[in-house]
Image (cartoon, rainbow, N blue to C red; front, side, top):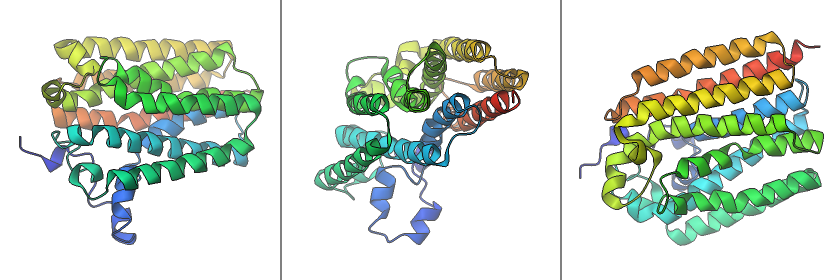
Length: 305
Protein backbone atom coordinates (compact mmCIF):
# COMPACT_ATOMS: atom_id res chain seq x y z
CA UNK A 1 0.00 0.00 0.00
CA UNK A 2 1.26 3.47 -0.90
CA UNK A 3 0.77 6.06 1.82
CA UNK A 4 -0.48 9.33 0.33
CA UNK A 5 0.22 12.46 2.35
CA UNK A 6 -2.46 14.29 0.35
CA UNK A 7 -5.08 12.14 2.06
CA UNK A 8 -3.49 12.37 5.48
CA UNK A 9 -5.37 14.21 8.21
CA UNK A 10 -2.22 15.74 9.72
CA UNK A 11 -1.32 19.30 8.76
CA UNK A 12 2.46 19.21 8.63
CA UNK A 13 2.69 22.97 8.00
CA UNK A 14 0.46 23.98 10.89
CA UNK A 15 1.29 27.25 12.68
CA UNK A 16 1.70 25.44 16.00
CA UNK A 17 4.47 23.32 14.50
CA UNK A 18 6.51 26.46 13.83
CA UNK A 19 6.25 28.08 17.27
CA UNK A 20 6.31 25.17 19.74
CA UNK A 21 9.31 23.06 20.79
CA UNK A 22 9.77 20.04 18.53
CA UNK A 23 9.30 17.70 21.52
CA UNK A 24 5.75 19.03 21.95
CA UNK A 25 4.65 18.50 18.35
CA UNK A 26 3.84 14.76 18.61
CA UNK A 27 1.57 15.47 21.60
CA UNK A 28 -0.13 18.33 19.75
CA UNK A 29 -0.73 15.97 16.84
CA UNK A 30 -1.92 13.20 19.16
CA UNK A 31 -4.71 15.33 20.60
CA UNK A 32 -5.43 16.95 17.19
CA UNK A 33 -4.81 20.54 18.29
CA UNK A 34 -3.14 21.04 14.91
CA UNK A 35 -6.44 20.05 13.24
CA UNK A 36 -9.19 22.05 14.98
CA UNK A 37 -12.05 20.85 12.75
CA UNK A 38 -13.07 18.26 15.35
CA UNK A 39 -12.94 20.86 18.11
CA UNK A 40 -15.26 23.15 16.16
CA UNK A 41 -17.66 20.32 15.36
CA UNK A 42 -17.80 19.54 19.09
CA UNK A 43 -18.08 23.11 20.39
CA UNK A 44 -20.51 24.63 17.89
CA UNK A 45 -23.56 22.40 18.57
CA UNK A 46 -22.94 22.86 22.29
CA UNK A 47 -22.80 26.65 21.85
CA UNK A 48 -26.05 26.54 19.89
CA UNK A 49 -27.83 24.91 22.84
CA UNK A 50 -26.05 27.15 25.37
CA UNK A 51 -27.22 30.25 23.49
CA UNK A 52 -30.83 29.07 23.23
CA UNK A 53 -31.24 28.00 26.85
CA UNK A 54 -29.46 31.17 28.02
CA UNK A 55 -31.89 33.28 25.96
CA UNK A 56 -29.11 34.47 23.69
CA UNK A 57 -26.54 35.59 26.25
CA UNK A 58 -24.47 32.80 27.88
CA UNK A 59 -22.29 33.78 30.81
CA UNK A 60 -18.56 34.17 30.22
CA UNK A 61 -18.03 31.42 32.78
CA UNK A 62 -20.18 28.94 30.87
CA UNK A 63 -18.54 29.82 27.56
CA UNK A 64 -15.13 29.17 29.12
CA UNK A 65 -16.09 25.94 30.89
CA UNK A 66 -17.80 24.40 27.87
CA UNK A 67 -15.03 25.46 25.50
CA UNK A 68 -12.32 23.88 27.65
CA UNK A 69 -14.49 20.83 28.32
CA UNK A 70 -15.12 20.27 24.61
CA UNK A 71 -11.43 20.60 23.77
CA UNK A 72 -10.40 18.19 26.53
CA UNK A 73 -13.04 15.55 25.83
CA UNK A 74 -12.31 15.62 22.12
CA UNK A 75 -8.61 15.27 22.89
CA UNK A 76 -9.23 12.36 25.28
CA UNK A 77 -11.29 10.60 22.64
CA UNK A 78 -8.60 11.10 20.00
CA UNK A 79 -5.81 9.82 22.25
CA UNK A 80 -7.70 6.71 23.33
CA UNK A 81 -8.72 6.08 19.72
CA UNK A 82 -5.08 6.23 18.60
CA UNK A 83 -3.93 3.98 21.44
CA UNK A 84 -6.48 1.35 20.41
CA UNK A 85 -5.99 1.75 16.66
CA UNK A 86 -2.24 2.30 16.30
CA UNK A 87 -1.66 -0.99 14.47
CA UNK A 88 -4.59 -0.29 12.14
CA UNK A 89 -3.47 3.31 11.60
CA UNK A 90 -0.17 2.16 10.13
CA UNK A 91 -2.09 0.59 7.23
CA UNK A 92 -4.32 3.55 6.30
CA UNK A 93 -3.19 6.56 4.24
CA UNK A 94 -5.19 9.07 6.28
CA UNK A 95 -3.80 7.89 9.62
CA UNK A 96 -0.38 6.37 8.94
CA UNK A 97 1.52 9.51 10.00
CA UNK A 98 -0.12 9.80 13.42
CA UNK A 99 2.39 9.85 16.30
CA UNK A 100 1.62 6.41 17.73
CA UNK A 101 1.58 4.86 14.26
CA UNK A 102 5.01 6.30 13.44
CA UNK A 103 6.46 5.61 16.89
CA UNK A 104 7.21 9.27 17.67
CA UNK A 105 5.25 8.73 20.92
CA UNK A 106 5.18 5.53 22.96
CA UNK A 107 1.95 4.02 24.24
CA UNK A 108 3.11 4.66 27.81
CA UNK A 109 3.53 8.39 27.18
CA UNK A 110 0.16 8.53 25.42
CA UNK A 111 -1.56 6.89 28.40
CA UNK A 112 0.07 9.32 30.84
CA UNK A 113 -1.00 12.23 28.62
CA UNK A 114 -4.53 10.81 28.58
CA UNK A 115 -4.66 10.53 32.39
CA UNK A 116 -3.46 14.12 32.80
CA UNK A 117 -6.31 15.36 30.63
CA UNK A 118 -8.83 13.25 32.51
CA UNK A 119 -7.65 14.92 35.72
CA UNK A 120 -8.07 18.35 34.12
CA UNK A 121 -11.61 17.38 33.10
CA UNK A 122 -12.38 16.39 36.67
CA UNK A 123 -11.47 19.91 37.80
CA UNK A 124 -14.18 21.33 35.54
CA UNK A 125 -16.76 19.31 37.46
CA UNK A 126 -16.24 21.66 40.40
CA UNK A 127 -18.00 24.40 38.44
CA UNK A 128 -21.06 22.36 37.37
CA UNK A 129 -24.33 21.58 39.12
CA UNK A 130 -25.07 18.04 40.27
CA UNK A 131 -27.06 17.02 37.18
CA UNK A 132 -24.37 18.33 34.84
CA UNK A 133 -21.69 16.54 36.86
CA UNK A 134 -23.58 13.27 36.50
CA UNK A 135 -23.96 13.76 32.74
CA UNK A 136 -20.27 14.60 32.40
CA UNK A 137 -19.21 11.43 34.23
CA UNK A 138 -21.51 9.31 32.05
CA UNK A 139 -19.86 10.76 28.93
CA UNK A 140 -16.39 9.36 29.68
CA UNK A 141 -17.17 5.64 29.14
CA UNK A 142 -19.14 6.52 26.00
CA UNK A 143 -16.12 8.38 24.61
CA UNK A 144 -13.89 5.39 25.37
CA UNK A 145 -16.39 3.04 23.72
CA UNK A 146 -16.03 4.51 20.21
CA UNK A 147 -12.73 2.89 19.11
CA UNK A 148 -13.99 -0.51 20.25
CA UNK A 149 -17.32 -0.12 18.41
CA UNK A 150 -15.56 -0.01 15.05
CA UNK A 151 -14.63 -3.65 15.56
CA UNK A 152 -18.14 -5.08 16.00
CA UNK A 153 -20.77 -2.69 14.59
CA UNK A 154 -21.31 -0.84 11.33
CA UNK A 155 -22.72 2.10 13.31
CA UNK A 156 -19.77 3.63 15.23
CA UNK A 157 -20.82 7.00 13.79
CA UNK A 158 -23.84 6.98 16.13
CA UNK A 159 -21.60 6.53 19.18
CA UNK A 160 -19.37 9.33 17.89
CA UNK A 161 -22.42 11.54 17.37
CA UNK A 162 -23.60 10.89 20.91
CA UNK A 163 -20.15 11.89 22.24
CA UNK A 164 -19.58 14.95 20.07
CA UNK A 165 -22.99 16.41 20.88
CA UNK A 166 -23.33 15.41 24.54
CA UNK A 167 -22.43 18.98 25.43
CA UNK A 168 -25.91 20.01 24.28
CA UNK A 169 -27.45 18.06 27.16
CA UNK A 170 -24.86 19.24 29.69
CA UNK A 171 -25.30 22.89 28.64
CA UNK A 172 -29.07 22.64 28.93
CA UNK A 173 -28.80 20.98 32.32
CA UNK A 174 -26.31 23.55 33.57
CA UNK A 175 -28.46 26.53 32.66
CA UNK A 176 -31.93 25.11 33.41
CA UNK A 177 -31.03 22.40 35.95
CA UNK A 178 -33.14 20.03 33.84
CA UNK A 179 -33.30 18.56 30.34
CA UNK A 180 -36.43 19.24 28.29
CA UNK A 181 -37.75 17.64 25.11
CA UNK A 182 -36.33 20.58 23.16
CA UNK A 183 -32.81 19.72 24.31
CA UNK A 184 -33.31 16.16 23.10
CA UNK A 185 -34.60 17.41 19.73
CA UNK A 186 -31.48 19.53 19.27
CA UNK A 187 -29.25 16.69 20.47
CA UNK A 188 -30.74 13.92 18.32
CA UNK A 189 -30.79 16.32 15.36
CA UNK A 190 -27.08 16.98 15.89
CA UNK A 191 -26.39 13.24 16.15
CA UNK A 192 -28.19 12.68 12.84
CA UNK A 193 -26.16 15.48 11.24
CA UNK A 194 -22.98 13.90 12.57
CA UNK A 195 -23.87 10.44 11.24
CA UNK A 196 -24.33 12.10 7.84
CA UNK A 197 -21.07 14.02 7.69
CA UNK A 198 -19.01 11.36 9.44
CA UNK A 199 -20.28 8.82 6.92
CA UNK A 200 -18.87 11.09 4.20
CA UNK A 201 -15.60 11.12 6.17
CA UNK A 202 -15.69 7.33 6.56
CA UNK A 203 -15.75 6.88 2.78
CA UNK A 204 -12.18 8.20 2.74
CA UNK A 205 -11.07 5.09 4.66
CA UNK A 206 -13.68 2.60 3.44
CA UNK A 207 -11.39 0.51 1.20
CA UNK A 208 -8.70 0.31 3.90
CA UNK A 209 -11.22 -0.48 6.64
CA UNK A 210 -12.59 -3.41 4.64
CA UNK A 211 -9.13 -4.89 4.29
CA UNK A 212 -8.21 -4.59 7.96
CA UNK A 213 -11.59 -5.65 9.36
CA UNK A 214 -13.00 -2.38 10.72
CA UNK A 215 -16.62 -1.37 10.22
CA UNK A 216 -18.41 1.89 9.43
CA UNK A 217 -21.61 3.26 7.94
CA UNK A 218 -19.68 3.91 4.71
CA UNK A 219 -19.02 0.18 4.34
CA UNK A 220 -22.61 -0.65 5.29
CA UNK A 221 -24.16 1.85 2.86
CA UNK A 222 -21.64 1.12 0.08
CA UNK A 223 -22.85 2.66 -3.21
CA UNK A 224 -26.10 3.80 -1.56
CA UNK A 225 -24.33 6.36 0.62
CA UNK A 226 -25.90 9.38 -1.06
CA UNK A 227 -29.41 8.14 -0.25
CA UNK A 228 -28.69 7.40 3.42
CA UNK A 229 -26.73 10.61 3.99
CA UNK A 230 -29.72 12.50 2.58
CA UNK A 231 -32.03 10.74 5.05
CA UNK A 232 -29.84 11.62 8.04
CA UNK A 233 -29.43 15.24 6.94
CA UNK A 234 -33.19 15.64 6.43
CA UNK A 235 -33.92 14.10 9.82
CA UNK A 236 -31.57 16.58 11.50
CA UNK A 237 -33.32 19.50 9.78
CA UNK A 238 -36.75 18.23 10.84
CA UNK A 239 -35.70 17.89 14.49
CA UNK A 240 -33.98 21.30 14.57
CA UNK A 241 -37.09 22.86 13.03
CA UNK A 242 -39.34 21.17 15.61
CA UNK A 243 -37.08 22.42 18.41
CA UNK A 244 -37.31 25.96 17.09
CA UNK A 245 -41.09 25.70 16.81
CA UNK A 246 -41.48 24.36 20.36
CA UNK A 247 -39.20 27.08 21.71
CA UNK A 248 -41.04 29.76 19.69
CA UNK A 249 -37.79 31.08 18.26
CA UNK A 250 -37.71 34.13 16.00
CA UNK A 251 -38.30 33.70 12.25
CA UNK A 252 -34.59 34.34 11.61
CA UNK A 253 -33.84 30.92 13.10
CA UNK A 254 -35.67 29.26 10.21
CA UNK A 255 -33.75 31.35 7.68
CA UNK A 256 -30.57 29.81 9.08
CA UNK A 257 -32.07 26.31 8.95
CA UNK A 258 -33.03 26.94 5.31
CA UNK A 259 -29.46 27.95 4.46
CA UNK A 260 -28.25 24.75 6.15
CA UNK A 261 -30.74 22.84 3.97
CA UNK A 262 -29.14 24.25 0.81
CA UNK A 263 -25.67 23.52 2.19
CA UNK A 264 -26.73 19.90 2.70
CA UNK A 265 -28.02 19.76 -0.89
CA UNK A 266 -24.65 21.04 -2.11
CA UNK A 267 -22.83 18.38 -0.09
CA UNK A 268 -25.04 15.56 -1.34
CA UNK A 269 -24.79 16.74 -4.94
CA UNK A 270 -20.99 16.74 -4.77
CA UNK A 271 -20.58 13.53 -2.76
CA UNK A 272 -19.03 10.61 -4.63
CA UNK A 273 -18.40 7.31 -2.80
CA UNK A 274 -15.10 6.65 -4.61
CA UNK A 275 -13.65 10.17 -4.46
CA UNK A 276 -11.53 10.25 -1.31
CA UNK A 277 -10.19 13.80 -1.69
CA UNK A 278 -13.60 15.25 -2.51
CA UNK A 279 -15.25 13.52 0.45
CA UNK A 280 -12.50 14.72 2.80
CA UNK A 281 -13.16 18.26 1.55
CA UNK A 282 -16.94 17.92 1.99
CA UNK A 283 -16.46 16.68 5.54
CA UNK A 284 -14.40 19.76 6.40
CA UNK A 285 -17.12 22.08 5.07
CA UNK A 286 -19.48 20.98 7.84
CA UNK A 287 -17.88 23.54 10.12
CA UNK A 288 -20.03 26.06 8.21
CA UNK A 289 -23.14 24.11 9.17
CA UNK A 290 -22.09 24.45 12.82
CA UNK A 291 -21.48 28.18 12.38
CA UNK A 292 -24.88 28.61 10.73
CA UNK A 293 -26.55 26.66 13.54
CA UNK A 294 -24.95 28.89 16.18
CA UNK A 295 -25.80 32.04 14.21
CA UNK A 296 -29.48 31.23 13.73
CA UNK A 297 -29.75 30.11 17.37
CA UNK A 298 -28.36 33.49 18.39
CA UNK A 299 -30.66 35.56 16.18
CA UNK A 300 -33.60 33.28 16.93
CA UNK A 301 -33.35 34.05 20.64
CA UNK A 302 -32.01 37.62 20.73
CA UNK A 303 -34.58 38.99 18.25
CA UNK A 304 -37.37 37.79 20.54
CA UNK A 305 -36.37 40.35 23.14
